[in-house]
Image (cartoon, rainbow, N blue to C red; front, top):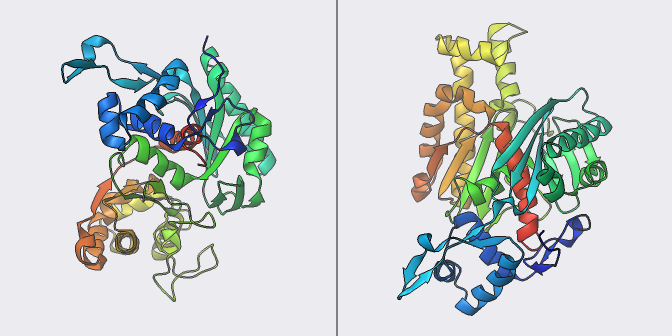
Length: 401
């Protein structure tokens, strides 16, 4: 049985009263994170990639091996470094498990992942109500159901990440405003902790997805990148200067609320002419209804009309593509990322506005910013829930995250 001693890794104290802790030096956190996201790696390679001394790496690695978080691969996989075998280190992924919950307006998407954010189990639970009490009870139910699938999950899961759209303060665990749920000033992390018995970390859903891409996806190895999601809303997560940007007040990357038309349609945020008021799925549907006069039209119908050549409906998607292209160019001009990953359920319509997105981006991105790579990456909601779990993993290994 693995021991319960505290080791040198670094974790936010506010989330750990319910969970075993790995307590903290930045050097140990750096070593563990490097192996977690880029391993298996030899000690020599860890020194090269982190810039730490060999002594500092050895000091960080020893307790992690003793605690069962790192293991050395067998000798037949060892490298030879100056005449001596260098056994690579890898993270023992099954040492800990994490729950991740993505909350939408209609359902919960829940996963259990291992320490490397590989999904081990997944469930979906429709929401019968958007009231806070009912959603929290549903989170407790789906989490309990998932953990019941394995004795290891039950014994080794101490943290849950919850991802919610809108203005979310990860530090305080407060949902300040979620338009799709109709919530304001909800202390969700505290309530989920009480319902699940797990240390809980709350995060904006797009930032959570960005954390997963940073550590385990398209952002691995990138000095900077952004994730832009299109669908029910238009969101953006930004990774720069070694961290996912959260903003001084917990709000950052809200490109959906960039005003691009001063006399444009009203947005739920209170502004006018926002990207989201033009290019989100609900906004597109409103424009299609106005163009066709069909009050009960669904997105699938709108897509079929556009693809069949309906000029008025195609114009709606072209306008949406232009708005998204402006938003992407704004990210490139302001942040200068290596790449922008485009995802979200709105990619179902990507063939209808891709040309306009790329044309607008090429026109509006300033100078060399236009060299930013646009990567289309469809990600189901289970990946968003995995992002929530990745945020929980981050609290285990990164001080003050």
